[in-house]
Image (tube, rainbow, N blue to C red; front, side):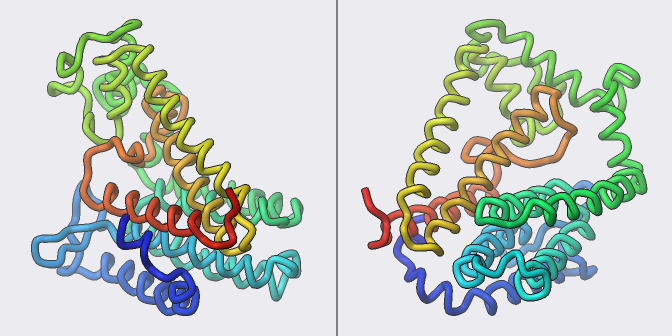
Length: 309
């Protein structure tokens, strides 16, 4: 985070296309047998010596920087189909496809949403938004129902009690944890669902454990902290006068807001299981490193001479 707070953003902008191409190359490496590391049937990890990381986490941040630079240069023609809209769609298609091939629908979905929200907030015509949504829904249907485990996730979301010991197990155990905490919780470290019941209790379903141990009141405090952070990030984004810095801070704010909402929504059973961590809270090496890196870029943009306080 401190390293990226100090980096020269003008240097990053000048070399962002090369950096983006290199990140695509790293994504390709995850698909090559013998190089990537398979976890839970998905090839999302690379290991260099003692260090293992998910390239998709890196690509999300780099792609947001690329979009911020692209919009700062071409915001006036973003609604020109061939010169403004198509190039960014081609650039988006490459990482989304490579991430889906790992497979990792959650990360691909979040990258897609962040991109379109950034475009929409910088003046993209609503007809393009509707057109892409119209194309994406059938594609998403095919992607989900052509895979047995994705189909199972959707079915478990719609009716977890139809198979309480199978596809519905995660959501049911999460809801038991949420309900067990009551108003003030069972006490720090006293949660029971994390002990052999709730899968991924330290990552995807950490919010359920938090609610069980410190209760609804504690969970509301956690949500309030996230709300305060995002409100501060929105405030900084509004104060940025430089187009690139404004677009970059908007994109990173959307990313944190989206991943926070999805993780908590999954824990509450309001959204299908996506496998996205709760920023700064879920246990994990590469996810936490890249979250701090993203915050470093945000703070770098916020201290630009063009940002007024």
